[in-house]
Figure 1 (cartoon, helix red, strand yellow):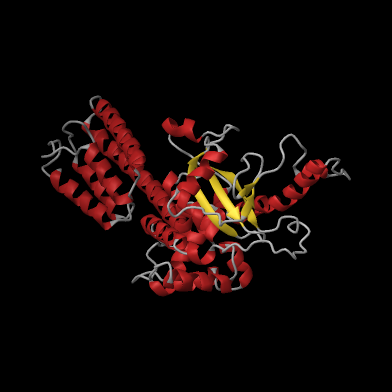
Figure 2: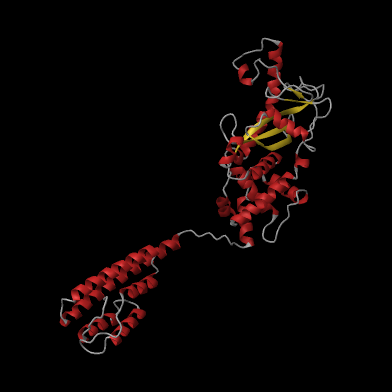
Length: 424
């Protein structure tokens, strides 16, 4: 039946083979048809060679195609068939024609067992594949809207957990991005879904693949609208950034009543990023981390007034502030007004720094410690008021997880992310 050369087949063997095949051992009409073809090829008479040898490779290919084996299993199956064929050729050189029928019966029995085993494995794989959860990224419009409603609009708690803002705030932000930011709906995606995807990335530092699963969108679509929402959000800075008001003379705020005409405080924070190894020296700060230096200015009630992002982590604080002041549409300090700064800056017009060489930070005044000199008293009150910018940065990073860990976004995109988070 199987051999590397020409095989002689007796009528008894052909009859036995035909009987086995026709009794349904294979359980496949196509296999029965193959057996009849074999009988017709071998029907020239007893002891006569068949007209065309049957190759084990062809039979292996037939089994592979019928059972849908994986490539690795298919190669293994072909090797086993070739070994069996070589062994059969060796045996048949030493036997007579009377025993060929018995050999064919044994081989057919072996093939039946192998066929049943392969069919069982194929059915098992099919059942397991059917049990796996399937998620299509080509959901229709109504299904995606229903999923967005369950994710965002079901209740305020879900909306806040997913987007870090409540439903009313989210609706207002979408309206502002549409009317002021220039973010427009498309044929396949409305504004609220675009904003929800972007906020989900910012709030949880979610990767593109996670957003694909959550919203049923492709990776390129998510990247496209993520940047579009960032740009539209940055355009809202003139509306959402607060216009500072000076501290009035009759202020009763225990932290700010000592600083008349003060507009707020400013400081810088470092946001960790990932950059190419050729640029790591410029972005490495004094602590050894790869960061960008972000200048933030806030009012007395912790509302951002101005944000500048993009300087390398190795840049000095004074240099970053000078860059903000030198920009044509950059940071400006009105006349006879000032901001509180820490000891990393120098005293200048519009900026009030603490006394150097004196106790300053709030943790130095704990456990009942009190200032002993007038300069220490000024520093203590200065630190209590200027601490508002530290709280502002802390709330910002606590709200948006993307600012707490380094990401693989380019530096330009990361600067947009920082400004957008401060704007929202």
